[in-house]
Length: 352
Image 1 (cartoon, helix red, strand yellow):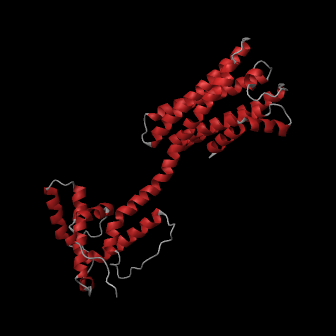
Image 2 (image 1 turned 135 degrees about the vertical axis):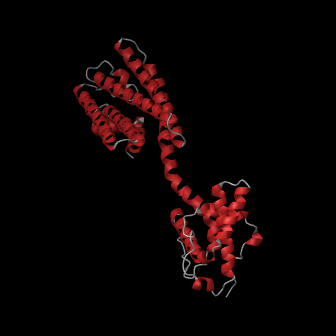
Image 3 (image 1 turned 90 degrees about the horizontal axis):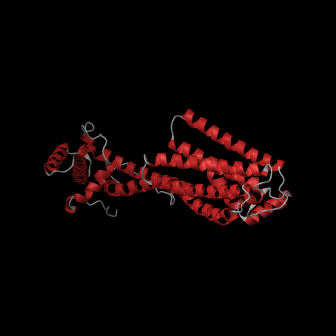
């Protein structure tokens, strides 16, 4: 969150109209310069802290590294304002402040400090992202690759700034590097860094709901088969905007209630025979178990429909052995499609 806030402030306060407004409101020419530099320090520092926390590790080490990083960039920000107050920058410069005041006492040191701190931070980010890039995959790898590209462009931005300021120190005029080349590099760097940070965050936030919806959809056939079998089952109307997790829990409750009702009708011999037949055909053990469970459940539903008085349930002395074991409900639900339609019971209810 801190990175998003500081990055947004950087874009807002980096515009020429906002720079002018800040100078007018404070009554100090060029006061927007140290303010913008401090926001830049906060943005780069929070980016390093975010990467440190993303990588994980011992909590003490993460806490210590975070404290050092925040303290260092806070000290740099304080030093920037102190140097600006000690120096004199009476002429407002909105586009070429760095080169115009490159030789002014104290302001010169402020410019050099912010460039050095920013260059250090982007080099650290490139190093951290490149090291981590080789040990991850998926959206995090894509994000790190984008960040490496963006921070590489930021390094080029700093080099242009350093070259222009250094030329001023040497009595030369390379201001074009700062005003005409560095600005496009910064503009090109920002989208890479923003998408690099944003893609992993967005994908991770969407992954859990997507998995819930996927499981909800996959459990549908089994839930429709078992719906209404439990004698005490009641239909619960789900709110329109219920989350996928809540809907998935409702389906699993329907399935478990139905399986519990069908328990006395389960034919474990049929299940064992189905597993043996599937294994002889070269079916994987997990798939064979799921297909056998599906066949046993379909047969149990047929048996229950043929026993409207529920005499088997009444005379049952307990649950059958093995009927309470954990099953892969998704595999069973998907295996129902392999059972011929003629072998399935009619689960549609006749009107009373």
